[in-house]
Image (cartoon, rainbow, N blue to C red; front, side, top):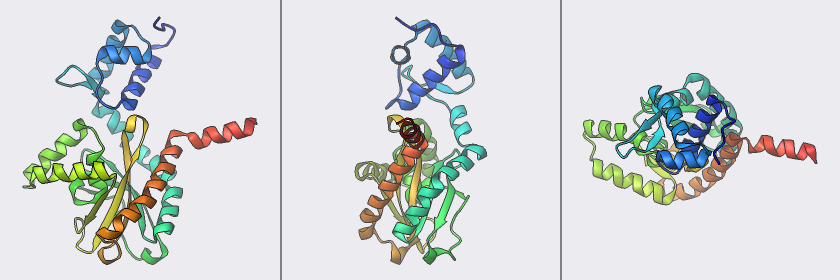
Length: 257
């Protein structure tokens, strides 16, 4: 029996959470079942969310998260919070790889560097902190394209076509990134710079950000990329746990023992 004791806000948040945790778009009946609501109630809540662009209906009448919600997560306040949570992880990753560790997110304008931490050897390197660039120019951008949904990626594919990129080559490259779980890029942002990046996945394997390791081309070549990526994957798992609040839950559990 569907629950009727929730407020309108709780129902809307439950629907948004279900979409965020899903592997792909969901139909009305699937959403209603997942959040334990009557179809009519779920439809009314989704209509309100769609009117404010928090959800979008695709051509097959399925629901996905809308740009309004994504804009909220990409706001300066949200970016600042993400950087704060990621900083300890980046400090450790920069030390373990002896390079530059960074975290990037996908915005409408492109791939934005949220935070970057430099090892001692790279202290004099200014880097790309705060900059926004076309995602196909870096490993972090390729990861964000490869592991995000079609609604977020399609505008960038169109922009890549306008920039005279070979789209079939780009899509094949994104498929390789998905298969190997990381991306390597050299010379895209600067002829002297290369980077390796891995996804930071949330619930439902939603890509929340990219974690990157950047260095000079002679210091970060393609044969060494897999080993660097493996170190970055461990850091991404740590950051995912921090973002999901598992650290806080562990503290609370330990405190109650």
